[in-house]
Amino acid sequence: ETGVTQSPTHLIKTRGQQVTLRCSSQSGHNTVSWYQQALGQGPQFIFQYYREEENGRGNFPPRFSGLQFPNYSSELNVNALELDDSALYLCASSQGANEKLFFGSGTQLSVL
Amino acid sequence: EDQVTQSPEALRLQEGESSSLNCSYTVSGLRGLFWYRQDPGKGPEFLFTLYSAGEEKEKERLKATLTKKESFLHITAPKPEDSATYLCAPILTGGGNKLTFGTGTQLKVEL
Image 1 (tube, rainbow over the protein chains, first blue to last red):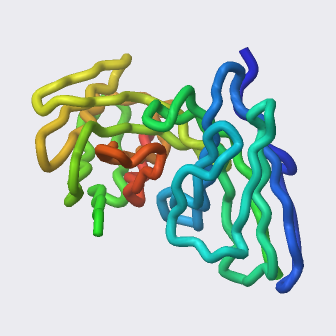
Image 2 (cartoon, rainbow over the protein chains, first blue to last red):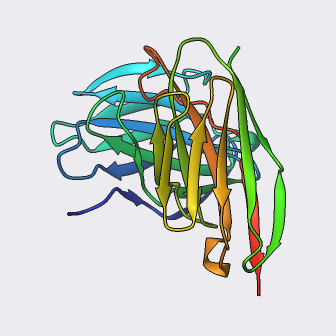
C-alpha cells in the first residue's frame, strides 16, 4: 500500500513568485486536505477536495488555490508569494471527509 | 472561534518516567478527537481517535482518554524513541477534515 507522497520535498522561491506543490493520495482515498505548518505551530487547514471539488476552506486568501484530479492526486498553487508563506505544507488524504487523515512528509517552502 | 490548547509546550522526561500531556478545547459540536505524533521534518502520524467521554485507547506505552472539555495522553515508562511532538485536534460535527490542531507538546525522553 503506497502512502501519501509529496513533491518537491524542499523549495526556495522569492517574494512575488508563484509555486505549485504536488500530492499523491494514499490508494483508495478520495479526499485530500492541505495544511500549512509554520515553525513551532500546529498545522493550519487550507482547504479540502472531495471528488475534484473544493469542499471546505480555511482562513487563507484566494491566492491559495488547488486542484484535485480524477486519480485523486492534488495540487496546491500559491500566487504572489509573501515572506510569511514560508512554512511546511502538508497534504493529507482520507477515505472520506470525516475520517482520520494520513499525512505526507510535506514540502518545506522558503520564501526569500 | 474554536480554540485548542495543549500543555505543557515542552516536556523533558527521563527514560521510564511516566507523565501526561493535556489537550483542552473550546469548540462547538464536538464529535471526537484525534491524537497525532510528529517527528521533526515529517508529517503527523495518526495515533488515536476518541469519540465518547470516558473512552480510552491504548497503543504500546501510550494511553489516550477523553472528557467533554479535555483529553489526556498518558505516557507510561517512556523510551527515547517516544521523543516527538504530540498534536491533538477536535473533530467537529459537520467539520469535515477542517481540523484545528493545537500547537503541540514537544516531548524529549532522555536515557
